[in-house]
Length: 170
Image (cartoon, rainbow, N blue to C red; front, side):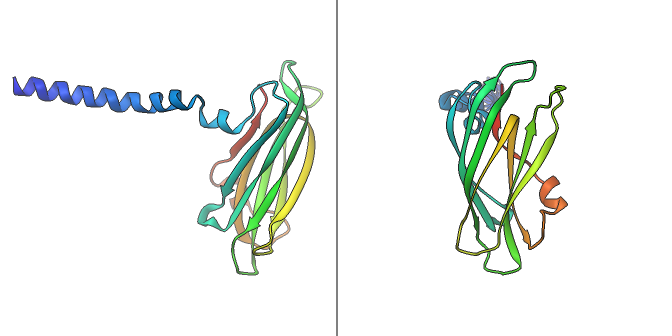
Protein backbone atom coordinates (compact mmCIF):
# COMPACT_ATOMS: atom_id res chain seq x y z
CA UNK A 1 0.00 0.00 0.00
CA UNK A 2 2.89 2.38 0.74
CA UNK A 3 4.30 1.99 -2.79
CA UNK A 4 0.91 2.78 -4.32
CA UNK A 5 0.55 5.94 -2.22
CA UNK A 6 4.07 7.07 -3.16
CA UNK A 7 3.39 6.53 -6.85
CA UNK A 8 0.06 8.33 -6.61
CA UNK A 9 1.74 11.25 -4.81
CA UNK A 10 4.50 11.45 -7.43
CA UNK A 11 1.97 11.33 -10.27
CA UNK A 12 -0.10 14.09 -8.64
CA UNK A 13 3.01 16.25 -8.12
CA UNK A 14 4.04 15.77 -11.77
CA UNK A 15 0.54 16.69 -12.93
CA UNK A 16 0.53 19.87 -10.82
CA UNK A 17 3.98 20.89 -12.05
CA UNK A 18 2.94 20.36 -15.67
CA UNK A 19 -0.25 22.38 -15.22
CA UNK A 20 1.39 25.30 -13.36
CA UNK A 21 2.81 27.17 -16.42
CA UNK A 22 -0.47 26.86 -18.33
CA UNK A 23 -2.43 28.09 -15.31
CA UNK A 24 -0.06 31.04 -14.83
CA UNK A 25 -0.40 31.99 -18.49
CA UNK A 26 -4.19 31.71 -18.30
CA UNK A 27 -4.23 33.87 -15.17
CA UNK A 28 -2.28 36.67 -16.85
CA UNK A 29 -4.40 36.37 -19.97
CA UNK A 30 -1.54 36.69 -22.47
CA UNK A 31 1.70 35.17 -23.63
CA UNK A 32 5.01 37.09 -23.61
CA UNK A 33 4.76 37.91 -27.32
CA UNK A 34 1.21 39.17 -27.00
CA UNK A 35 2.16 41.27 -23.99
CA UNK A 36 4.78 43.19 -25.98
CA UNK A 37 3.04 43.35 -29.35
CA UNK A 38 -0.21 45.17 -30.06
CA UNK A 39 -3.16 43.11 -31.21
CA UNK A 40 -4.06 42.78 -34.86
CA UNK A 41 -5.72 45.86 -36.24
CA UNK A 42 -4.76 47.83 -33.17
CA UNK A 43 -4.21 51.49 -33.72
CA UNK A 44 -2.73 53.39 -30.86
CA UNK A 45 0.34 53.48 -28.75
CA UNK A 46 1.96 50.50 -27.06
CA UNK A 47 4.74 51.01 -24.54
CA UNK A 48 7.74 48.68 -24.62
CA UNK A 49 10.68 48.05 -22.33
CA UNK A 50 12.70 48.67 -20.44
CA UNK A 51 15.06 46.16 -22.02
CA UNK A 52 18.69 45.91 -20.92
CA UNK A 53 21.86 44.72 -22.57
CA UNK A 54 23.68 41.67 -21.24
CA UNK A 55 25.78 42.93 -18.33
CA UNK A 56 23.35 45.86 -17.91
CA UNK A 57 25.58 48.28 -19.86
CA UNK A 58 22.63 49.83 -21.72
CA UNK A 59 18.87 50.17 -21.30
CA UNK A 60 16.13 51.17 -23.75
CA UNK A 61 12.42 51.90 -23.35
CA UNK A 62 9.81 53.69 -25.39
CA UNK A 63 6.60 53.44 -27.36
CA UNK A 64 5.36 52.15 -30.69
CA UNK A 65 2.36 53.41 -32.64
CA UNK A 66 0.97 51.31 -35.51
CA UNK A 67 -1.77 52.63 -37.77
CA UNK A 68 -3.56 51.61 -40.94
CA UNK A 69 -3.16 47.86 -40.70
CA UNK A 70 -3.86 46.17 -44.05
CA UNK A 71 -5.09 42.57 -43.98
CA UNK A 72 -4.01 41.53 -47.46
CA UNK A 73 -2.30 38.16 -48.04
CA UNK A 74 0.51 39.32 -45.75
CA UNK A 75 -0.85 41.82 -43.19
CA UNK A 76 1.19 44.93 -42.53
CA UNK A 77 0.71 48.26 -40.80
CA UNK A 78 0.72 51.23 -43.14
CA UNK A 79 2.81 53.28 -40.71
CA UNK A 80 4.74 52.41 -37.55
CA UNK A 81 6.30 55.13 -35.43
CA UNK A 82 8.89 54.06 -32.86
CA UNK A 83 10.22 56.41 -30.22
CA UNK A 84 12.13 56.00 -27.01
CA UNK A 85 15.21 56.67 -24.95
CA UNK A 86 18.51 54.82 -24.88
CA UNK A 87 20.62 54.98 -21.72
CA UNK A 88 24.36 54.26 -21.80
CA UNK A 89 25.01 52.87 -18.34
CA UNK A 90 28.78 52.37 -18.60
CA UNK A 91 31.15 55.06 -17.39
CA UNK A 92 33.92 53.97 -19.78
CA UNK A 93 34.15 56.46 -22.66
CA UNK A 94 35.02 53.77 -25.20
CA UNK A 95 31.82 51.78 -24.56
CA UNK A 96 28.44 52.73 -26.01
CA UNK A 97 24.88 51.54 -25.66
CA UNK A 98 23.05 50.33 -28.77
CA UNK A 99 19.36 49.86 -29.52
CA UNK A 100 19.11 47.86 -32.74
CA UNK A 101 15.71 47.49 -34.38
CA UNK A 102 15.02 44.85 -37.02
CA UNK A 103 12.06 46.08 -39.08
CA UNK A 104 10.49 43.50 -41.39
CA UNK A 105 8.39 45.10 -44.11
CA UNK A 106 6.17 44.00 -46.98
CA UNK A 107 7.27 44.72 -50.55
CA UNK A 108 4.97 45.17 -53.56
CA UNK A 109 5.67 41.58 -54.67
CA UNK A 110 4.72 40.22 -51.22
CA UNK A 111 8.21 39.44 -49.91
CA UNK A 112 9.22 40.17 -46.31
CA UNK A 113 12.78 41.55 -46.21
CA UNK A 114 14.12 43.43 -43.18
CA UNK A 115 16.29 46.44 -42.42
CA UNK A 116 18.20 47.34 -39.29
CA UNK A 117 17.79 50.73 -37.67
CA UNK A 118 20.42 51.41 -35.01
CA UNK A 119 20.58 54.04 -32.29
CA UNK A 120 23.87 54.62 -30.42
CA UNK A 121 24.49 56.49 -27.18
CA UNK A 122 28.01 57.00 -25.85
CA UNK A 123 27.12 59.60 -23.22
CA UNK A 124 27.01 58.05 -19.78
CA UNK A 125 24.19 59.43 -17.64
CA UNK A 126 22.45 61.35 -20.44
CA UNK A 127 19.71 59.40 -22.25
CA UNK A 128 19.49 59.73 -26.02
CA UNK A 129 15.98 60.25 -27.41
CA UNK A 130 15.05 58.82 -30.80
CA UNK A 131 12.08 58.65 -33.13
CA UNK A 132 11.70 57.04 -36.55
CA UNK A 133 8.88 55.97 -38.85
CA UNK A 134 8.61 53.03 -41.26
CA UNK A 135 5.90 52.03 -43.76
CA UNK A 136 4.30 48.66 -44.69
CA UNK A 137 5.66 47.09 -41.50
CA UNK A 138 5.05 43.43 -40.74
CA UNK A 139 7.21 43.04 -37.61
CA UNK A 140 9.47 45.13 -35.35
CA UNK A 141 12.08 43.50 -33.10
CA UNK A 142 14.64 45.00 -30.71
CA UNK A 143 18.01 44.05 -29.31
CA UNK A 144 19.92 46.16 -26.77
CA UNK A 145 23.72 45.86 -26.66
CA UNK A 146 26.66 47.51 -24.92
CA UNK A 147 29.96 47.45 -26.79
CA UNK A 148 32.86 49.51 -28.06
CA UNK A 149 32.41 52.77 -29.94
CA UNK A 150 31.92 52.01 -33.65
CA UNK A 151 30.01 53.27 -36.68
CA UNK A 152 27.61 50.33 -36.58
CA UNK A 153 26.76 47.49 -34.19
CA UNK A 154 28.97 44.41 -34.27
CA UNK A 155 27.96 41.06 -35.72
CA UNK A 156 27.88 39.72 -32.15
CA UNK A 157 25.27 42.33 -31.24
CA UNK A 158 23.22 41.57 -34.36
CA UNK A 159 23.34 37.78 -34.32
CA UNK A 160 24.04 36.56 -30.76
CA UNK A 161 21.14 36.21 -28.37
CA UNK A 162 17.46 36.70 -29.04
CA UNK A 163 15.38 39.57 -30.39
CA UNK A 164 12.46 41.03 -28.42
CA UNK A 165 9.28 41.34 -30.51
CA UNK A 166 7.77 44.82 -30.16
CA UNK A 167 5.15 44.55 -32.91
CA UNK A 168 3.76 41.75 -35.08
CA UNK A 169 1.03 42.36 -37.64
CA UNK A 170 -1.57 39.59 -37.64
